[in-house]
Image 1 (cartoon, rainbow, N blue to C red):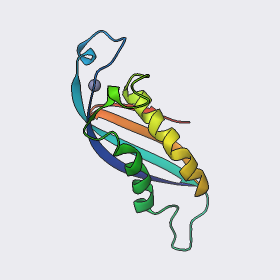
Image 2: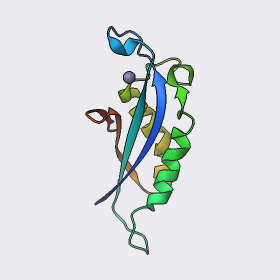
Image 3: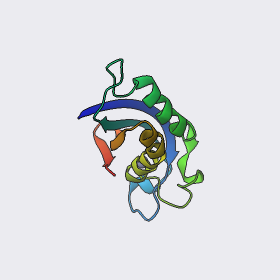
Image 4: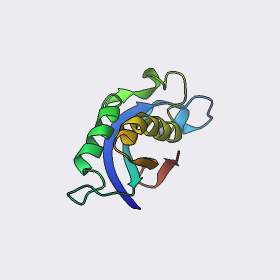
Length: 122
Ligand SMILES: [Zn+2]
């Protein structure tokens, strides 16, 4: 089995609901996202997937969040824009595209800071 990962960054604001602490107030993060996919077969070029294709899929999802207030964007107007929910949102958004390419989603990790992250594994 092979695994391939790409990373992408974006900046956004959020405020956590149902939470008591500093993060209930509006604040921002420079988020970092890592997506890891897995598969068995390499293509004729010796690649599981082209890094550029994987990044393009991630970019397509992340760009609607970049430089926005997450609490106002679907589905985060309903669910909390936590790192955990962001990771699942991005993973769910990539799943169909990956399946079409014969790839499995292994994990999505979202860092809010250099030392704090959440990982979603389907
Ligand atoms: Zn935060």
